[in-house]
Image (cartoon, rainbow, N blue to C red):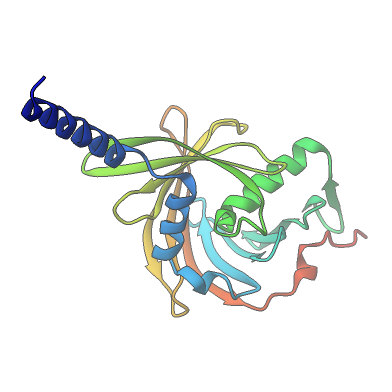
Amino acid sequence: MNANRAFLLLLAAANFCSGAARAAPPSAEAVVAASKRATGGAAWDTPQGCTETGSHGDGAITYLTRFSLQGYGMRTDGTRGGDTRSMGFDGKVRWQTAGPGAVDSKSDPASLQEAIMTNYISVNGFFFPDRFPARLRYLRTAQEAEHRFDIIEMTPTGGRPLEVWFNRQTHFIERVIDGQGTPPVRVEASDYRRNTAGLTIAHRLTVYSTDGAVLDRGVVTGFDCGAIDTRAFSPPAGR
């Protein structure tokens, strides 16, 4: 083999290796870090918790949700036709009101798994791996129309896996698939807006069944973060 031919072969091999390196997918942690930067970065780290208001059921139900950003804990009060029902999770017990003075509390493994999964994805727990431990795994990329997505599997400790789709251009979450839910659902997130504190969240959430039927539509009308009373997460005393 002459020297020129050897040089050309080495150059071709180097180009091949360089192309393979460029084609390698990012790590799950890198995808999450890019999303945190795009939606507020360090502004997420300071608040104790957040309060969100909105509606779902095409406006039939209004809600107030309070949640902690420091650890598991959330509560939602939903009102329909003047009747308000509440549900929450304090990290140990999942509960809901069940009529005047009645509270249904559960701490069995299945109930806790559901509560952890809901709480984790609702508060972007993946932004805080020290506060909300989870296993993250990069699954694949996907292309839909002009949009390309990085798809991450997230399994919070004590919860079940979720498939989360990050838009590669904006780094926003546009889809969450809960394939092990009862029933399995797909949630599409859109209408991202930044509030005065510099935090960007989706203001429209549409829930679909596996056959594509719309199960619910949600609209966020307010989102503010700061201090929060964590006592709200505990089950109310029944009468």
